[in-house]
Image (cartoon, rainbow over all chains, first blue to last red):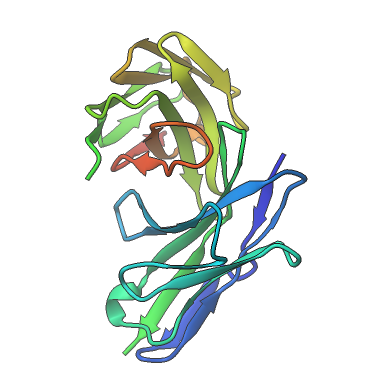
Length: 113
Length: 113
């Protein structure tokens, strides 16, 4: 089975500052990795995903994440956050041959004006 | 946006009563999932379906049952609701397992008094 750890439950950051949301996973098989974002009172939306190839993946709104196999990590970064980035962020892992996603407990990002 | 609706969106019920939540999709995706979201736990899988009449248990299936008689509908039933089942329930769909992202519905907020 797989598991996901998001070490930071809450991350406050000032507007235009950089941010990193950490995600570590454990798995004995090949995995796919995802970051989802949840705005208040809404469902989850895919932010970005790593399936194969380049270990650095980017989203359309300036976030990026890097797959590090040796450290079993998939940290999410943004060089300059906006107020609109305030949301809950979830890391998820799926086995390459599995049916299920495993989600972390989430990181609440609050951007301070 | 993926065509996923959940009904009802909000429900308040009493302990011991049966409750059924409905997930409806218009995407013709094979896989459907029910999750519950609770503070400090992230999303946890309750049950999932990999085809009509094909379902399997997830991590927190006790007290829940599901049915899928049509590709587009996936029902979650709480046979006798308990206060511990107060939560936000999300339905998700995916086209294939593993690599494909899951698309989430808007959620159902259930309160069991």
